[in-house]
Image (cartoon, rainbow, N blue to C red; front, side, top):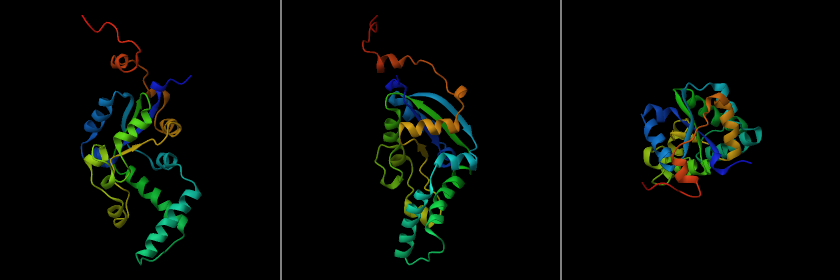
Length: 200
Protein backbone atom coordinates (compact mmCIF):
# COMPACT_ATOMS: atom_id res chain seq x y z
CA UNK A 1 0.00 0.00 0.00
CA UNK A 2 1.31 3.46 -0.96
CA UNK A 3 1.09 5.77 2.04
CA UNK A 4 -0.11 9.30 1.11
CA UNK A 5 2.64 10.85 3.25
CA UNK A 6 5.23 9.05 1.09
CA UNK A 7 4.26 10.73 -2.20
CA UNK A 8 7.28 12.17 -3.97
CA UNK A 9 7.84 15.10 -6.29
CA UNK A 10 10.83 15.94 -8.47
CA UNK A 11 12.00 19.56 -8.42
CA UNK A 12 14.86 21.20 -10.31
CA UNK A 13 16.09 24.71 -9.62
CA UNK A 14 16.87 25.91 -13.13
CA UNK A 15 19.99 27.84 -14.16
CA UNK A 16 18.34 31.23 -13.56
CA UNK A 17 17.52 30.26 -9.96
CA UNK A 18 21.10 29.10 -9.38
CA UNK A 19 22.62 32.17 -11.02
CA UNK A 20 20.42 34.51 -8.96
CA UNK A 21 21.45 32.79 -5.68
CA UNK A 22 17.87 31.72 -4.87
CA UNK A 23 18.66 28.10 -3.93
CA UNK A 24 18.29 28.66 -0.19
CA UNK A 25 15.13 30.75 -0.54
CA UNK A 26 13.47 28.10 -2.71
CA UNK A 27 14.42 25.22 -0.41
CA UNK A 28 13.23 27.21 2.62
CA UNK A 29 9.76 27.68 1.09
CA UNK A 30 9.39 23.91 0.55
CA UNK A 31 10.71 23.06 4.01
CA UNK A 32 8.23 25.40 5.69
CA UNK A 33 5.29 23.36 4.38
CA UNK A 34 6.50 20.23 6.17
CA UNK A 35 7.68 18.42 3.04
CA UNK A 36 10.80 16.30 3.60
CA UNK A 37 13.88 16.63 1.39
CA UNK A 38 15.09 13.10 0.59
CA UNK A 39 17.40 13.78 -2.37
CA UNK A 40 19.55 16.76 -3.32
CA UNK A 41 22.41 17.36 -5.74
CA UNK A 42 23.92 20.14 -7.83
CA UNK A 43 24.86 19.03 -11.31
CA UNK A 44 25.31 19.93 -14.95
CA UNK A 45 22.36 18.56 -16.88
CA UNK A 46 23.15 16.81 -20.17
CA UNK A 47 21.23 17.33 -23.40
CA UNK A 48 20.40 13.62 -23.51
CA UNK A 49 18.84 13.61 -20.03
CA UNK A 50 16.89 16.78 -20.76
CA UNK A 51 15.33 15.37 -23.96
CA UNK A 52 14.33 12.21 -22.05
CA UNK A 53 13.02 14.34 -19.20
CA UNK A 54 10.75 16.50 -21.39
CA UNK A 55 9.42 13.34 -23.07
CA UNK A 56 7.36 14.91 -25.88
CA UNK A 57 6.00 13.04 -28.89
CA UNK A 58 5.31 14.01 -32.51
CA UNK A 59 1.71 14.89 -31.71
CA UNK A 60 2.85 17.39 -29.05
CA UNK A 61 5.41 18.92 -31.42
CA UNK A 62 2.76 19.25 -34.13
CA UNK A 63 0.17 20.87 -31.82
CA UNK A 64 2.61 23.35 -30.29
CA UNK A 65 4.16 24.04 -33.69
CA UNK A 66 0.74 24.84 -35.18
CA UNK A 67 0.26 27.43 -32.43
CA UNK A 68 3.63 28.99 -33.29
CA UNK A 69 2.72 29.05 -36.99
CA UNK A 70 -0.63 30.68 -36.19
CA UNK A 71 1.04 33.32 -34.00
CA UNK A 72 3.74 34.05 -36.58
CA UNK A 73 1.12 34.41 -39.33
CA UNK A 74 -0.98 36.74 -37.15
CA UNK A 75 2.10 38.86 -36.42
CA UNK A 76 3.00 39.06 -40.13
CA UNK A 77 6.16 37.01 -39.63
CA UNK A 78 7.32 34.47 -42.21
CA UNK A 79 6.68 30.77 -41.63
CA UNK A 80 9.99 29.21 -42.60
CA UNK A 81 9.56 25.57 -41.59
CA UNK A 82 7.04 22.85 -40.84
CA UNK A 83 4.92 23.18 -37.69
CA UNK A 84 6.51 20.08 -36.15
CA UNK A 85 9.96 21.75 -36.38
CA UNK A 86 8.70 24.81 -34.53
CA UNK A 87 7.37 22.41 -31.89
CA UNK A 88 10.78 20.75 -31.55
CA UNK A 89 12.37 24.19 -31.25
CA UNK A 90 10.37 24.78 -28.05
CA UNK A 91 11.98 21.79 -26.33
CA UNK A 92 15.31 22.59 -27.98
CA UNK A 93 15.27 26.03 -26.32
CA UNK A 94 14.45 24.44 -22.96
CA UNK A 95 17.30 21.95 -23.33
CA UNK A 96 19.72 24.74 -24.27
CA UNK A 97 18.64 26.70 -21.19
CA UNK A 98 18.78 23.73 -18.80
CA UNK A 99 22.33 22.87 -19.89
CA UNK A 100 23.83 26.39 -19.78
CA UNK A 101 24.68 26.36 -16.05
CA UNK A 102 24.36 24.06 -13.02
CA UNK A 103 20.93 23.01 -11.80
CA UNK A 104 19.90 21.76 -8.36
CA UNK A 105 17.92 18.52 -8.53
CA UNK A 106 15.75 17.56 -5.55
CA UNK A 107 13.19 15.02 -4.42
CA UNK A 108 10.59 16.11 -1.87
CA UNK A 109 8.36 13.71 0.04
CA UNK A 110 5.12 14.21 1.92
CA UNK A 111 1.33 14.12 1.74
CA UNK A 112 0.27 15.23 -1.78
CA UNK A 113 3.83 16.39 -2.42
CA UNK A 114 3.22 16.97 -6.14
CA UNK A 115 0.21 19.23 -5.52
CA UNK A 116 1.87 21.11 -2.66
CA UNK A 117 4.99 21.79 -4.74
CA UNK A 118 2.93 22.93 -7.75
CA UNK A 119 0.96 25.31 -5.52
CA UNK A 120 4.18 26.83 -4.11
CA UNK A 121 5.90 27.10 -7.49
CA UNK A 122 2.97 28.76 -9.29
CA UNK A 123 2.01 28.96 -12.96
CA UNK A 124 4.54 28.47 -15.75
CA UNK A 125 4.58 32.13 -16.78
CA UNK A 126 6.00 34.32 -14.00
CA UNK A 127 4.10 37.50 -14.95
CA UNK A 128 0.75 35.75 -14.58
CA UNK A 129 1.72 33.53 -11.64
CA UNK A 130 -0.02 34.35 -8.36
CA UNK A 131 1.53 36.58 -5.71
CA UNK A 132 2.83 34.34 -2.94
CA UNK A 133 4.17 31.69 -5.33
CA UNK A 134 7.88 31.33 -6.01
CA UNK A 135 7.52 32.33 -9.65
CA UNK A 136 5.09 35.14 -8.84
CA UNK A 137 7.31 36.59 -6.14
CA UNK A 138 10.85 36.01 -7.37
CA UNK A 139 10.93 36.60 -11.12
CA UNK A 140 9.29 38.61 -13.89
CA UNK A 141 9.77 36.83 -17.23
CA UNK A 142 6.91 36.37 -19.70
CA UNK A 143 6.06 34.24 -22.73
CA UNK A 144 6.10 37.40 -24.86
CA UNK A 145 9.62 38.39 -23.82
CA UNK A 146 10.90 34.82 -24.20
CA UNK A 147 9.32 34.51 -27.66
CA UNK A 148 10.80 37.82 -28.81
CA UNK A 149 14.25 36.61 -27.72
CA UNK A 150 13.68 33.07 -29.12
CA UNK A 151 14.52 31.47 -25.78
CA UNK A 152 12.93 29.46 -22.97
CA UNK A 153 10.97 31.22 -20.24
CA UNK A 154 13.19 31.85 -17.21
CA UNK A 155 10.85 30.69 -14.49
CA UNK A 156 13.32 29.43 -11.84
CA UNK A 157 11.98 25.93 -11.22
CA UNK A 158 10.77 22.73 -12.83
CA UNK A 159 8.35 20.62 -10.81
CA UNK A 160 6.45 17.42 -11.56
CA UNK A 161 2.91 17.81 -12.84
CA UNK A 162 1.47 14.46 -11.62
CA UNK A 163 2.58 11.75 -9.16
CA UNK A 164 3.24 9.23 -11.96
CA UNK A 165 5.28 11.83 -13.84
CA UNK A 166 7.27 12.49 -10.66
CA UNK A 167 8.24 8.81 -10.43
CA UNK A 168 9.43 8.83 -14.06
CA UNK A 169 11.42 12.05 -13.59
CA UNK A 170 13.03 10.91 -10.33
CA UNK A 171 14.34 7.79 -12.11
CA UNK A 172 15.97 9.99 -14.76
CA UNK A 173 17.84 12.23 -12.34
CA UNK A 174 18.47 10.06 -9.26
CA UNK A 175 19.72 6.56 -8.50
CA UNK A 176 17.81 4.78 -5.72
CA UNK A 177 20.87 4.89 -3.45
CA UNK A 178 20.84 8.71 -3.67
CA UNK A 179 17.40 8.91 -2.01
CA UNK A 180 17.51 8.73 1.77
CA UNK A 181 14.68 7.18 3.77
CA UNK A 182 14.71 8.73 7.22
CA UNK A 183 12.30 10.09 9.80
CA UNK A 184 11.92 13.74 10.74
CA UNK A 185 10.70 14.56 14.24
CA UNK A 186 8.17 16.98 12.73
CA UNK A 187 6.42 14.06 11.00
CA UNK A 188 4.90 13.13 14.35
CA UNK A 189 3.20 16.54 14.47
CA UNK A 190 2.11 16.34 10.83
CA UNK A 191 0.92 12.74 10.55
CA UNK A 192 0.45 10.97 13.89
CA UNK A 193 -3.16 10.50 14.96
CA UNK A 194 -2.46 11.26 18.60
CA UNK A 195 0.10 13.80 19.70
CA UNK A 196 1.05 12.53 23.11
CA UNK A 197 3.78 13.48 25.55
CA UNK A 198 4.29 17.08 24.45
CA UNK A 199 3.81 18.47 27.94
CA UNK A 200 6.62 18.10 30.47
